[in-house]
Structures are given as C-alpha cells and as structure tokens.
Amino acid sequence: MPAYKLTYFNARGRAEPIRLLFAAAGIKYEDARIEGADWPALKPKTPMGYLPILEVDGTTLCESTAIARFVAKRAGLVGKDDLQQAKADMIVDGMKDILKKLILMVLEKDEIKKEELKTDISEKTLPEFLSKYENLANPSGFFVGDSLSWVDVTFYNLIERVRAMFPGDHLKGKPNLVKVMANVKANPGIAKWVKERPESAF
Amino acid sequence: MPSYKLTYFKHWGRAGVLRLLFAAGGIEFEDVRIEREQWPELKPKTPMGQIPILEVDGTIICQTKAIGRLIAKEAGLAGKTPLEAAQVDMIVDGLSDLQVKIVDFFIEKDEKKKQEKIKEFAEKTLPMFLDTYEKLANSSGHFVGDALTWADVDFFSLMFFLKDHLPNDPLKGHVNLTKVRDNVTSNPGIAAWMEKETSH
Image 1 (spheres, each protein chain N blue to C red):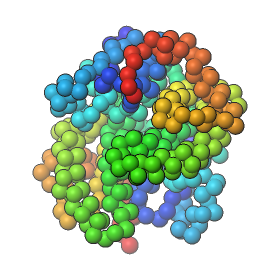
Image 2 (image 1 turned 180 degrees about the vertical axis):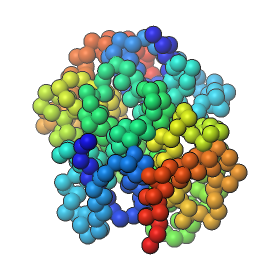
Image 3 (image 1 turned 90 degrees about the vertical axis):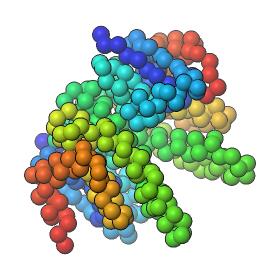
Image 4 (image 1 turned 45 degrees about the vertical axis):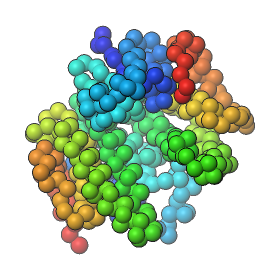
C-alpha cells in the first residue's frame, strides 16, 4: 500500500474534493496542513509553485483535478470504461467556469463591482449552470453510470462552497441534483469525514 | 475501433491539439469544421453550449481536455501507468492555466489594453511559465517518462498557436522544451498533419 501525503493550507479550498475522495474510498493518507508563513519555503519545492500537492510513490503531483482523478481511479470512482470516464471528465471540467466566477467575486475588492458580480452569479450564471447540470445527472442521483463517482463528490463540494457564499435553496425544483447531494452525504466515509474534519474558514 | 467525429471552427484554437492527437495515433476521424454562422444552430445540441465536441459511437463529449484524454488513451499517449497518467494530466492542466491568460489578451477588444496585455504576457507571464516547464521536461525532451505523450503534444500545440502572436521564439534558451517541440514535430503522423495544415 503506497503512502499518500496531501499538502495544502488549513482550508477546504482546492484540496477538499481530494480529501472527500480519500474518505469515500477509505484510503488512509497524511492530511498535511501548512501555515501561511511556511509557504514561501515550500513553494520552490512544488512542481508548479502552488498547492495542493500529493506525494505518492516518490513522485509529487500538483493540479487539484489531476490529483482528484488519480485518487478517484485508485478508489474505483471514475467510471467503468473510457467513454464513461470521458463523460465524467467533461462534467467535472464544466464546473470550473462557475468556480472561477465565484472566486473572482470573492476576491473583488471594489464593493460596487462585487455586488454586480454577485448579482450576475445569483441571477444568471448559477441558475443556468444548475439547469444544465440537472439534465446531466440521472434520476437516481448520479452523473455517470449507476453508482457514486468522483463527479458526484466534486459537485457536492462545489454546492457546499456555493451555499457558503450564497445562502439559499438553489436546488429547489432540481430533483436529480438533490438526489446527487443525498447520495454523496449517505456515503459512510464521507459522512464520517464531514463530521470529523478540522474546522476552517473556507 | 469506434467512429469519431470532431466538430469545431476552422482555426487552430482549442481543437488543434485534438487533431494532432488523432494524427499521432494514426486514428481516422471525421474533421468537421464549421463556419461562425452555423454555430447558433448547433449550440443547443451540444452538452454545454460549447465546442469542440467529439461524437463517439453516438455519445457526445465536450470539454477539450476530456476529449483530449479520450483520444490520447486510444492513441497510447496518456501515460503508461496511473501515476504517469496523473503526471500527464498535471502538465496539461498547467498548460490550460496558461491558456486562460492567452484567451484574456486574445479577446480584449480595446486595442491599447490588448497590446499592454500581450506585452505583460510576453515579458513576464510566459517566461516565468516556461522556466517552470523547462524543469518539468527531461533532457530527452519529454514531460513524462521517455516517450511521447499528450503532455508533449499539448505543449507543442500551444506554442504553435502562440508563434503568430509573439515577436520572438519563446523557447530560445530552453533546451529541454526545444527538444519536446522537436520530438513532437518529428512524430511521423504529426509531421504529415502539420505539412497539410500549414501549406495553403
């Protein structure tokens, strides 16, 4: 059994989908969380100068989606054949645009611009995204095939992030997506992790 | 072998690398190139309102990297082990981070702002990126292992796209990256494809 060491800040952020996947699969790993002050010394030792990184089998991986896919494969949560895996990849990648907009909004310092971005997200981008994704999920509450995959887990994490920034019942009238959330929460490994994970601001 | 139909606009853009992957793997595919005017009618038929899309035996896949990974797997260019596959994925993801910055100046309509953005990109962003990637490539001119992968092809594709927008060869002084480019262009399938693509 290889040793896995995940390094990130003390936050859910970009590392949380990876942690959720380790939890779902019951795979042990070292969940290393660094302080901001320790980052400058670590940065040049990372492949591309950012976190998260995953050290495994003597290799250091970066890019959170690449790492998540690698862990999902180990966990058997990627889809049963190349085409299903491609469908999974496409649905995961499709979540990046909205995440980018959310991050831009959070980082915006100009209050007026920030409100404009918030309105654009809550009235246009988010509803459009959720409508699209309601159609991509099936009525049993899975995005790919008939069982939990990393797409469902990644989606769950995204919605949790959205809810933290935009309180509200965004999934009202979206039964497939509601089922996806329920399926992910019902996974015993994930349920345990969510209950026990360290508290952090974001 | 499944049947493949790739749909995109005519230009290199996001599909350039996908066509190269088919070429490198010697995989037949229908290379559909649409005019701008045809796009509004096609858009609602795509999974996420975007192209490129790949139709494989009746299923439609969108998102360039999802398509790229599928073709790369078929072509044997996705890495030999799950760990190598993850390394390929990480290199490709880093390239698409750079591509976001390219799109930013590419779509800038204000000409003065556009020139400022190109300058910042050419003098700061790109050199920093290439310094990082020079260390990630090995001296035999590969990003992962000792054979051509999608990571190498994707790198070449982006550099090829950029060459019309930059005054100088950005790979000058980068020994490993120059070797990556050479390895890609000397792949027989890719060499033949590039000959066809660039001769008109």
